[in-house]
Image (cartoon, rainbow, N blue to C red; front, side, top):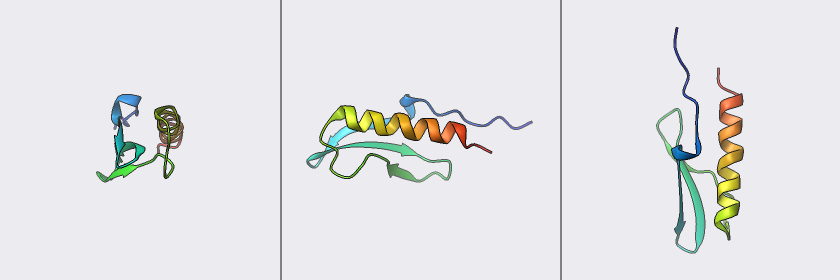
Length: 62
């Protein structure tokens, strides 16, 4: 039986990059993506986007 990976907030790197906040994670396909909205002005917005993405990934796993 194969165990699926559960994503947690530690899987996301949240940092200031070139004038905006980003929330980067490595997806199941091995590609790093910024999942925060473009021009995120606060860390709180980036963390919120990471939480939404984490919840969506965990809910929609095969």
